[in-house]
Image (cartoon, rainbow, N blue to C red; front, side, top):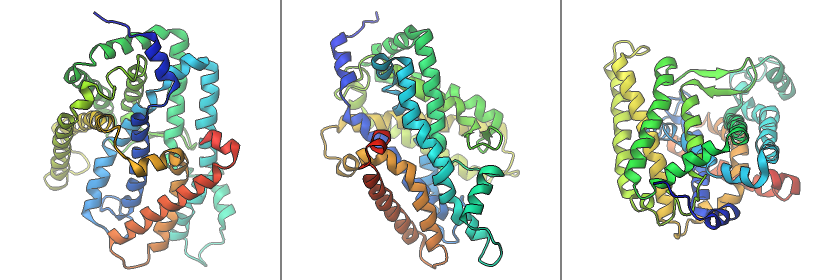
Length: 395
């Protein structure tokens, strides 16, 4: 029998931030910085001549789960926001928090970030293009990249869908939320269901479009990885439904059964990641036609990817919940500035990679310079920008 929890608990959850669910978002943003710092020094990336195979493993690990997990975390507080604000005010606030930063990113920040790429392939004396020329050509002719800001427009679009569903049929979200709440003491059941949802959302698009196709509306900076459209949507709305009925007392309770079993989810994640590694190794070494692997390999890789992504969502959530009372010094210090760091970091990433490109330093040293420099500079600039009241309300 499905039992609706006490309304007072739900109201209290809506009013207060839940620190162990804020930390994963900050952690993923830190992983984004790590990901973008190392990708130029991978064999996969074909960027800097100095490379290290270990960075390929880092990129593969991150790329196989972290953005789906980010969409899941982003959905957790949507229902409470809709209850408190209503659809119209909710969308107005999301447009301010996501839409405006997206526009600033694609019109100002990303052209600044990508200018070193133009300089790398157009040496002094070979062109009379200055930055203003480059900026105008980017916006009018293209290509017009969005960089990491793609996440903002996709999240805003999903928020619009969530608001529409809430306005038309709010009972759907609450009903699914109560179903999830009912299995709060049966985390293995929840895990199997989530594995199934993850696989069902990813496999058809993965088999249909592969994993390198990006859907983009004309030349506008609105891209999304085609194979992951349904995956991101499923994770976001799973988060919305999990957050529909008492985050503090439901399946993501700090003292709940899911959190207690963090050592169970971690081995599952590792097994699925090893499966991904084996399949990637087979692809690179045993496939006659690298560009067209057999269907069996595609199915195996799709299953491993979807299951690893689901297992990492459980692992990440449970670890932060289980150790909610521990000292997470760096993450807690970064938390107020995390969103600003996400928006600004790509400028420093690419310019620092450009600055160290011509030096014969080991890949690990170049990565360290880029990562530490990017974190320090983007964090410091965010702190300064947040002293402006309007900016602080946005980021």
